[in-house]
Image 1 (tube, helix red, strand yellow):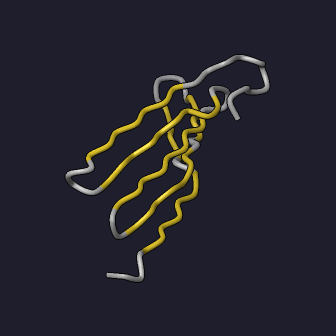
Image 2 (image 1 turned 90 degrees about the vertical axis):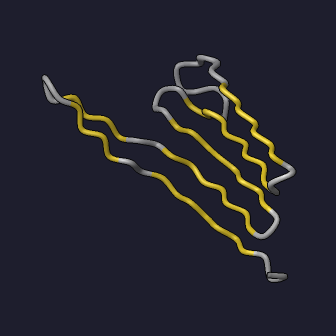
Amino acid sequence: MLFDYLYEYMMVLCVFCREELGYKVVCEQVSHHPPVSAFHVTATDYRVHGAINPKLKFWGKSVEITPKGITCRFCSTTM
């Protein structure tokens, strides 16, 4: 989802490919308010994808960050 509830358009896409090492990484900020980032990693013997949405609380002079999200890993059966 590239449009958040404020109808702002915020797309940050990062693709990092190292075929000689056997992996490719794709990251994207899919929502700006609240901040949500998604990622997908493909390698020769595994795949990982997920989403990260940290919860931030401001306590005057300090900040509390609670990482939230989900990650799934799939291994190749040909190892």
